[in-house]
Length: 150
Image (cartoon, rainbow, N blue to C red; front, side):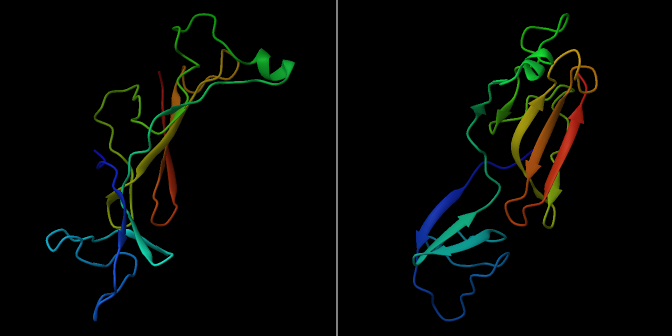
């Protein structure tokens, strides 16, 4: 599965031969650890190194603002949490087991789980009360999604 988040700010002085280009070894952090294959940003003489990261879980609550939107939310027979499993970050709440392969990008690196979108209601159900799982690569900003049925 995906690796745990690492987002570090490291102040450095460029030495001869260092090259802060995307995907290259950019520097030695403590004389032992090396940052390789990372997304590199320079900002105010600091180096941001971003690899596959885990976004903290942020539940999303539906707030329909019209009668039409309110009319499509809710299930007559589905379980209590169905329709309320929307979130950003955290870990995917897989519907079909944990053996799902995380999408990869940029040379086979696992993409970051960005969020999941639940079925809305009986009128707008995804693949039998399923969900869409969205992943993003923070190196090239490619996105991929997986649809699972409930």
